[in-house]
Image 1: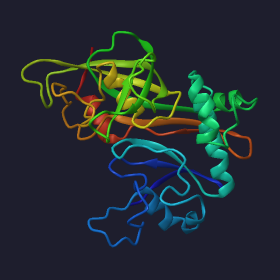
Image 2 (image 1 turned 135 degrees about the vertical axis):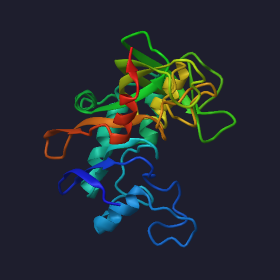
Image 3 (image 1 turned 45 degrees about the vertical axis):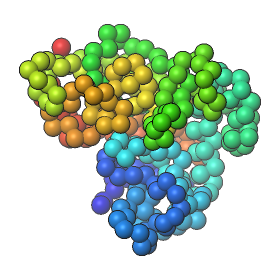
Length: 290
């Protein structure tokens, strides 16, 4: 598989990740590229190591230079560190971005134990870094979101009874420990209707296309948050509802990391863009604007 490289310097790679590929294996056993385990499917980091062998000297397996992830069936922009200096710097950027957004005092106080190299408890550099890091996604969700914009602010943690999933809870929830704040902002791009697709059954189904910006980086955050407000990502097999229709020719979750802005090691602010993949654009063409 040929990976599309959006940007490259001595410290950082920006990759346009296709859907259908895992970013890195969840454990160090079995090993990476030469694993004897069957079946074994190469991950994104496997493919990058084939192209950039020195990546094995960055970080630790299985992540190596990966500083953030996209789910297997999510496409779009992913940053990878090519050097140890790049890895440390990017980790600080992403950690400061999340740290400056959360309000939970207990989580802030424990931050140094979890990530000793962001910038301490609200250090002077945190707000500057936060302003220079932006991540935006394009998501098609099930149903009509009436408000043109909104913010989803919850606690989030592993779902009870299904370790694969995350569950969102109100900020006042006291039912379990280990929950973290998660903040997602969205803006409506377009609202659609359709009388075609899986689960339609002779009725029109409604969808909303969103631009989503995450202020924190939690596992499955967008997918979990949109399901929490009863508008799961279209085509999401894990978080979608049983009665959620799926647009015609949509074969994966409609979620794409379209924009990322970040400060690089040299101090320059860099913006990366990724166009909506053709298979998702075709899905939209089959829908009717409301």
